[in-house]
Length: 70
Image (cartoon, rainbow, N blue to C red; front, side, top):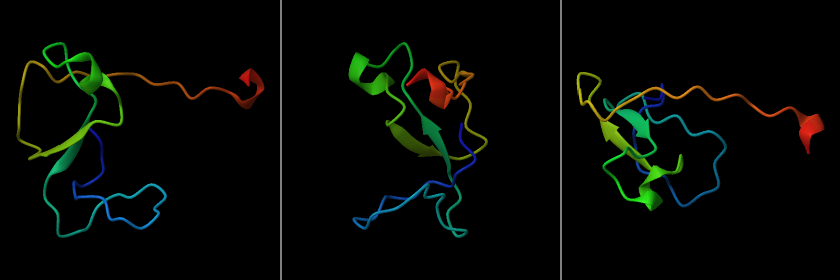
């Protein structure tokens, strides 16, 4: 789950779009073990009502890489 509200992306360039206050669905990112390999990327996103439940939704901890690593 993401805190962002789900809306289709516009064609204009954006930085960290979070959706509109009129949207009601939250963003789910990434795939799950039932999806194909291409759907398991963080770029994959769908909108679901916050009350949606599924055993395929999990929690991932992400650590931002330090600039010194590059």
